[in-house]
Length: 263
Image (cartoon, rainbow, N blue to C red; front, top):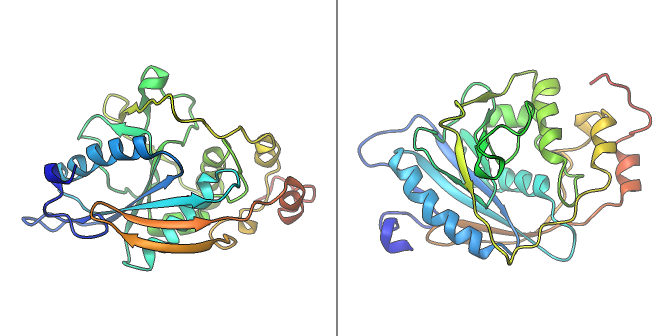
């Protein structure tokens, strides 16, 4: 895999063009657990894709260890925090491990508004799933991500964190999202018979409807144990464990019964 495009990649998955100076320094954050096949395919496609766009980028992979349910939002927050320890990145792109961009006009940079990158997926016949859909691949300038307080940490299992983040952008950051045209923002989903999806979070709709105060959960409340950081040739691996909260603990911490719709 490295022989195709890795000769000039620096340790940790860092690459920059030699003939120009990009305006943004980009961190690609990928959350991961037991998805080795998907991850290898993504790397094999993403590095040449980003290099063709002449971007200054580093790829970070956050790997969740332990038996707790997968927590995508928490892992993205951890990736943001850990990446900032190594460089003051100006743009963060949060990327699902099983999505491959198809069109190089889908530029992996950040705009003045948070950008939904994966507008049209082959899984959904290259159509936007619903108007407020904000999942798959998203891009934030650093200050905008901080302005949302990051992703929620309370969505254990599948579902909820993307819709929660959309609400954070609109109601807390008070910005609209932006998208490339549907004919450009196209993605192919990597399919595998070996992968078993995380169970759906049965409480996700209760949490979403509660209109809790976003200051009570996010980057400012993330707790994790850092097992180590390894700088491989093609990516930086961040290994972590998380402690799972019960729904009752979440309900109390977010003051869900006490909040109104006011943000």
